[in-house]
Image: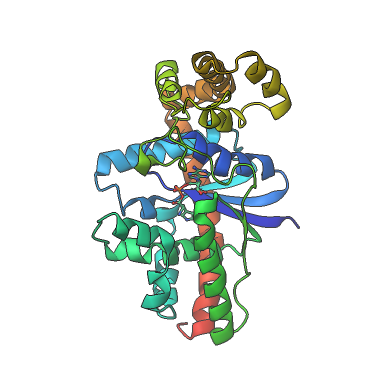
Amino acid sequence: MKKILLSGIQPTGDMHIGNYFGAIKQFVDMQDDYECYIMVADLHALTTVQDADALRKNIFNVTATYLACGLDPKKVHLFQQSDMSVHGELTWILNCITTMPYLERAVAYKDKVANGKEASVGLFDYPMLMTSDILLYDPAVVPVGADQKQHVEIARDTAEKFNRIWGETFTIPEPLILESTGIVPGIDGRKMSKSYGNTIPLFGSDEEIDKAVMGIVTDSSGDVPANVYAIHKLFKTEAELAPLYEANKGKYKALKDALAADIKAFIGPMRDRYEEIQANPKIVEDVLRAGGTVVKARAQTKMAAVKKAVGLN
Ligand code: TYM
C-alpha cells in the first residue's frame, strides 16, 4: 500500500516559478511513490477572486498547469475542491472545536490584516477549510512551500484535538517542505508572491520572462548579483553556474541574459504542452470529471465515518 499525499493550489491568477519549484515539482517527482490527491483549491480562491469568469479561467489554468508540468491523471487524482461538498461540511464541525484566539494567530491572516485588509469570515476561517481538505484523505504527507507550514500545523493540531474528543479518526499529516526551494525568492529578493508583484511567470511569453528577469533587483556592491544567482540556482547546479559567474564578474546584463535563456529552455517544453491544452479544453474537463468521481466516493466514505464519530448519523 502506497502512502497518501495531498496538496493543492489556489486558482487566483497566473502561476509563477515559486509555485512550480515550491509545490508542483514536488508533486510530479512523488507521483509514482505515493497515492496522490491534488486539488484545485477553488473555494479558497473565492476569498480573493470574486469575478466568475476570472475564477472559471483560473480553475482551468491551474488544472492545465498541473498537466503541462507532468502530473499524470492516470496516476494522480486531480480534482476541484468545490466538487466535494464534504470539505465545507467538515469545516463546520472543525469550526466547532476551534477557538477564535487560536485562528487569530495564523500568520497569513495576520499579514493581510496588518496590510490594512478588512478580513472576511472566509479569510479568517481559511485554515479550517484547508484542514478539512487535508484530513478527509488521511495523507501521510502534504508537500507545500514554507509559507503553508503553519496551515499544515493547524491541520495537525486539529486532527489531534478531534481524535482526543471523538476517538481515533484522522491521520496526523506531515508537511513536506524542501530546504532548497521552500522559499523561492522573487525579483526583489523577497519571497516570490503574486501579492508582492515580484513574480516570474511560469508560462509567460519570452518577452514577459525577459522583462521579469531584467527587473531583478541588483546592487552594485559585489561581483555576483545575489538575487540573480538565487533564482539561477533553481535552473542550474552551482557547479554549472560557477564558470559562468566567474567569467562574467560584475556583468549583470550578461548574467541576466544567461538566466533568461536558461528559464526559457527549461520552461519551453512545458509551455508548449500548456498551449496545446489551452487549444483543447476538453482535456481539462475530462480530467476533472474523472478525478471528481473517484475522489467524491472516497471523501464521502470518510465523512460518513466522521459523522458517526461525532454522533450525527
Ligand atoms: P497557494 O495557492 O498560495 O500556493 C500554492 C503552492 O505554492 C507554494 N508557493 C511557494 N513555494 C516556494 N516559494 C514561493 N515563493 C512560493 N509561493 C507559493 C505554496 O507554499 C503552496 O504550496 N492554502 C494553499 C492551497 C491549499 C492547500 C490545501 C495546500 C488549499 N488547500 C491543502 C495543501 C493542502 C495556498 O494558498 O497555496
